[in-house]
Amino acid sequence: MDKTKRYSEQLKHLKDESLYRTMHVIESAQGSHITIDGKEYVLFASNSYLDLCNNEYVKEKTETALHTYGTGSGGSRLTTGTTALHSELEGRLASFKKREDAIVFNTGYMANVGVIGSLTAKGDVIFSDELNHASIIDGCRLSKAEVVKYRHNDMEDLEEKLKLHKGKNGLIVSDGVFSMDGDIVNLPKLVRLANEYGMLSMIDEAHATGVLGANGYGTEEYYGMEGVTDIVMGTLSKAVGSEGGFVCADGTIVNYLRNKARSFIFSTALSPVTIASAIAGLECITADRVAALRNNVQYFCDRLHAEGFDVQSDSAIIPVIVGDEQKALAISAKLMEHGYYISAIRYPTVKKNSARLRITLMSSHTKEEMDGLAGLIGRYCK
Ligand SMILES: *Cc1c(COP(=O)(O)O)cnc(C)c1O
Image (cartoon, rainbow, N blue to C red; front, side):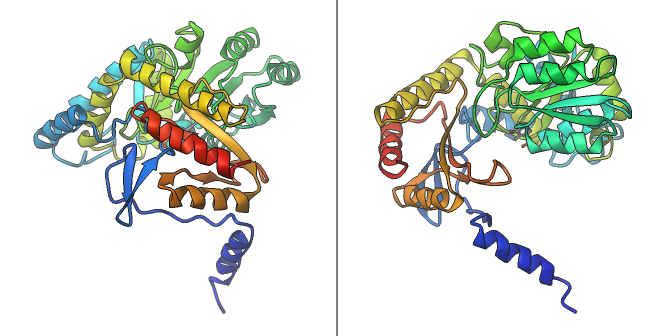
């Protein structure tokens, strides 16, 4: 009996559907330029929006931490894994997001899974945007609460659904910036509805931290309404240039998570080296860097406009929808031939037949690089 036959059949099916996935092995640091197979590419697909993964200041601070604290943390946060650096990072995150307290998880994925599962119980309801990130979806799957999906960023649909569950406890959860579309949650309305219906409000700031607002504080700063959301989750793996997930909230919620979130309790703490790079990365989120990123996004959108594309983005994510999966892969390969690295995003990350080039900008991209890419998009995507 061939025990792996059904898996190889599935893999063949994925290949037939242009949904098979492979990895490119990068031989350099993550930055606006990377090396693959000895060839240099301009990278327009990274979530390292402020180009901090290879920053000299961050590397120096991290090296110092390596010499002081060594490499591993040796235990979970609640046993032996909490160093002074972990506490310092949580303090800094709390003030960055204007909250009483913060808790750091090993990844954003683990933060979402731990938070959503532990804050909701049987009989509760979770209202989740249909385009929320997979880690939110998996958090909902682990929860014993009923899950109600609402139409993308559609606050009328959300309210209709809230009305059907009046009097229940629960959570409304949304990406702050949607990861594959780059649009922004209607936070004023979401928070108003959450408060009106007695639900906790939660936003995922993975792509908003370091990007939205004059200081990069995120979605609340973008709307000029800091402190209004009950739970602000985010990740240190994108603009911050390190690794890890976090939740900022009032002291009660954070303490509750320290005691109840299983993905926090039952996993070894992040290395002090990683934590040090996160602290230094956070320090590098300055109004100047955020403005440079925003100016690049505006410049690139204008260039795409000139090429005949109707695009606009207030985040660093600019999707060019292609539709067909095979076509998206072919365009991505063409762009690589020209020295530009842009990923083709396909199902199940996005819906079938909505494959796209997900272009992401960095604060360090030059006008020449953006001009070059815009021209190629004009040539191949029409
Ligand atoms: C990347 C991402 C996550 C997961 O964060 P990691 O730190 O990479 O695990 C969660 N939510 C959203 C919206 C993301 O884009």
